[in-house]
Amino acid sequence: MHATPEQVCDLVQRDAPGLSLSTVYRTLELLEALGVVTHTHLTHGASTYHAGGHGQHIHLVCHRCEAVAEADTALALDLASAVTDRYGFRADLSHLSLHGLCRACAATEDADR
Amino acid sequence: MHATPEQVCDLVQRDAPGLSLSTVYRTLELLEALGVVTHTHLTHGASTYHAGGHGQHIHLVCHRCEAVAEADTALALDLASAVTDRYGFRADLSHLSLHGLCRACAATEDADR
DNA sequence: TTGCCTGCAAACCCTTTGCATAGTC
DNA sequence: GACTATGCAAAGGGTTTGCAGGCAA
Picture 1 (cartoon, rainbow over the protein chains, first blue to last red):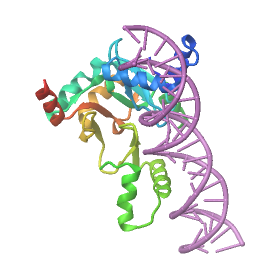
Picture 2: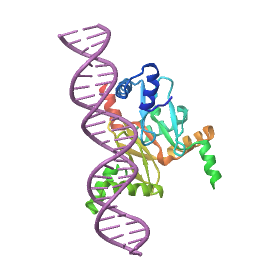
Picture 3: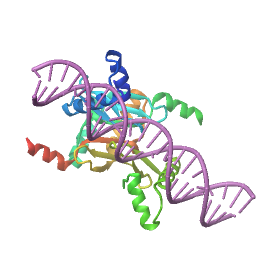
Picture 4: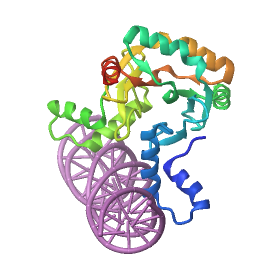
């Protein structure tokens, strides 16, 4: 579940028509402070918020079709402990985003050559 | 080496005073198309550009003090092959950013408790 | 009444674009 | 003369903020 503030606003307006974008921003800010949701900057123009309550996941962001897939956080546990050991950096895996090419676009790219 | 377009502009202006921000954006856009530099969205307000010519690295972004450290790409090779095997996703490690707490902030955070 | 939440509009930052000019080939 | 690069200013998208009104405690 990912959504930009604008998308969140659209969704919420189905239940609460007239709800303004400011309220969405203010609520998201609050929820983030509480740790209920997190946000990352996947592409240029818009932040992406996602609920933190349904388990962590890694974001796989395709920079060709801009699709965002989710992957199991467990895959990055080794990486996380490695950077902690080596750099003292305590990684928050729920914020991890990996850029690259999704399966479909990788196939297309190969076919182009 | 990381810099926002504005920082790039400041740096370049030491050699070329009067150079405008538009030119910086246009040049960075060109350089990115050529693959010389890449950019990521580490925080909210500003993109971060970095030169691609001096070797890939992972970004370790502290979301407390906003410091950006670099880590060895090799640490993520296992992760990259894992997501490729499992999801068909071809990760571009030069774009990889890991959010969390840097050593200093992690220590501060622990001391706070 | 007091305080919180909301909508609206304005302001703000970052980025892009249009247009006119200066420089080079 | 044609083309490219540049500066300037305006426009655009996303986000934040100030202020006034409405509601609940």
